[in-house]
Image (tube, rainbow, N blue to C red; front, side, top):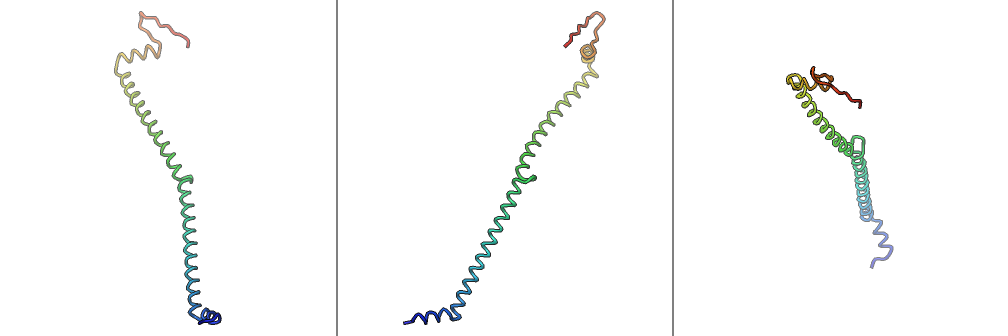
Length: 121
């Protein structure tokens, strides 16, 4: 039966030292891998937060898209108004009724047998 002294001698043998050295190497590798993964996760978190909340981030992008849509709607309305005004200009230049209407309303002119009443607003 092995005694306490024999057990201590076994622990001091190269095989026991080899086992503890191997376990130290394995635990050191695990610690390095764990530290690397934690560092990687921190870096990814910082990059992700910058992508979302930075001046050129996703939230700013969404707001700019909304603003772009608003401007496009305004441009479409203005282009529609421009087309209507161009049509009105063509009518005023070519249609005798429109020419007379503009002369009466805009300039306050009247035919020889008509009276024009002007009111202060």
